[in-house]
Image (cartoon, rainbow, N blue to C red):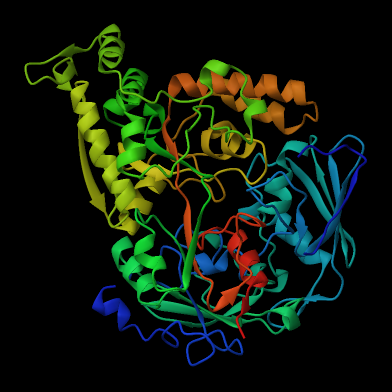
Length: 564
């Protein structure tokens, strides 16, 4: 969505035995009796990806933040539905307006808001939030954030901010100044008793689950149907699948190759909404400390054409994924932003001969073992994925087989979530099967800035240092041509100019492949339609539906009602 400088936007408010013994709130999935939706006292039971042990961390800027903090507790000003090119919905915010040159945004928030501890939520909190270090990294361009009265705040930037609308208004978490003004080391703040604006507050956190209950000071507290949400820890997909089938889990986003296995109980329904790229992260940048054969662009290019994406889609994801574009534009939604039609879709079939030609042109020769090498060093790579993520684990095994056929040795292994998180944050890896967060508006800019922006736009860091909060460039990619185009794209409201800039970015990233595209992930969401109503459906896809979705999951919770 591109805004005119003078346009004002008015917004519409609109099973493992150990897990089964966790003491899940209520039991069964019957309607109308104990364990049914009933009067709303029954907890909605959710798995959003947490594994045991759960550690209380509700800091929205922490890499290990618990999912319930992002949307159910902390909110941005507006909610953007990433499944459609639609107007945003007001959360804390009510409306916003750009000045004529796009350098200032005047935001009006809803009146009479309160934080969950009962303190007033005013424009002063919004102004504070935008100037808080975690929300305002160096290079953000913010000149000032000024509350002109209790419900109005003016954000002023050095350049026009049309392209960063979602980043500013849809993903900047609003913080209570009376709490966070005392937090000087936000990176290490566990925030075990969070004060937020969202529909829920923390009731209890254990190593096996955490429970949120209705925030009595929420702006729409009287309309909140689900009063209690229990997020459980599950260590693998199979256990979560068993819990769904047994009626012990109400909402999750996960991959199940045969959905009939969990829908047979008459309570669970499902939807598939492919939105997010699945890729191979490569630690690509030697200047920032990456080591290994994957730092050579020729190795990344060879691996890219050695991959049989059709086989991966069919065997690892049972045909539920979408085709991925190496430009990272989501097709068909973003097809107007693909500058060169030759880059529309990544190659679908493996081409081992082409992979060999790429390597040989770069000075590699095939050794007696059948693996290419240079200067006596074979092209041997380690590839990790999260233990229990069966679709990603299967994809990793297939990639290892396909790579070996092209003379590249890939050793696939699985790790626990925390090890995965630490590896990608610190850069201690060669290859990872992982996801990229798809854009929440019909424009790939957010991916370009957050995932491909380098040190010039504060989107990455040297190996051994965590990637900055709110940025996701785990590959440590840093390309001055890309950075310059990103910075220029921030300020333009001209579609032709933006497409030209995106074309520059696409040429660089399609060649360099710091993330090797695999598929648009099969995003299956399973939810209990017998006990709860109001879920996103194909007919009314008002939000991205998986339980792990930041911000969207909080919005979905406010739309649900227990079946009476």
